[in-house]
Amino acid sequence: MLPPLGFTLLRALSDGDFHSGEALAASVGLTRARVSQVLREAEMVGLKLERIRGRGYRLLDALPFLDRAAVVGKLGAVAAGLTIDIVDTVDSTNSELLRRATRGDVHRHLLAAEWQTAGRGRRGRAWTAVAGGSLTFSLGWRFERGAGFLAGLSLAVGVALARALESAGFDGIALKWPNDLVHRHCKLGGILIELTGDALGPSLAVIGVGLNVRLPPAARSEIAQAVTDLAAIAGGRRIDRNAVLAGIVTELATMLEGYARDGFAPLRGEWQRRHAFQKKPVKIVLPDGDTARGDVVGVDADGALVLDQGGRRLRFVTGEVSLRRP
Image (cartoon, rainbow, N blue to C red; front, side):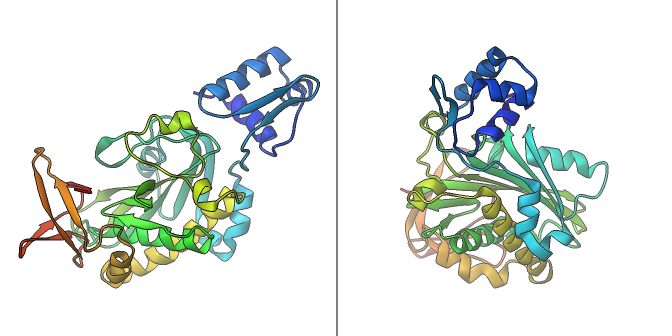
């Protein structure tokens, strides 16, 4: 785990230029030996540094670190309706927003983190993220309706994310039911939605999103499936994570306002057009370990997956099963 000092040094190096150990030490009020130790710790969590005697340190594959002012500036008028908080480290942005919800209102509250120490995916899985190389954030949103109305929310969020990424120049983004973003069948990102409130409403949705921006080989080796990142899709183009985050949040806010009125049904057709497995054979892994196979028909108005199994229609609810290629 990187200490706060580590993020201070990494931000100084995020311009991709060389910085001397002496200058870095002076900027943070520590010895050069301590600076060297902290930067070695940064390398241990997957960041690549170049050291040249007489020139200092340079962060390879440097990405601009998240900056609240930069995000707010790119959000424009949308920022006026949001509370925006960016932190270096948190256990999980979803967990932190849920804790804050017990103390106050987190409606339209965006929390982004450079690094999650205990990031979570669906069904309790860990989410691997890299400081400076991921986008991990959560957005709180209050609805007057209950959990039944929100059954298709993760699919709607996927549509909003795909729209935003396409607008930012990342082509070929597809969706995998119920909560993954993929590119050429490799996982690019995931969505985790956690609900609190009454069954019939009102309810609070904490919408967590994790996106791979640039995953080093060490991080990829920790993930038990094929993955990709925005850097690979961009083909070498420099990525401004602040601009990407602002574009996503803008699209999300617009989508969520519409969802509060109309639910998932208006987005159903677009989601199916973007589904990586639409009209294709798949295997469903059930909670008890058994499997079911069939061809994807699509999703219904509530977001449930519908398969055709030799003329028999099977319906699967979000969160019950895992969808895989046969």
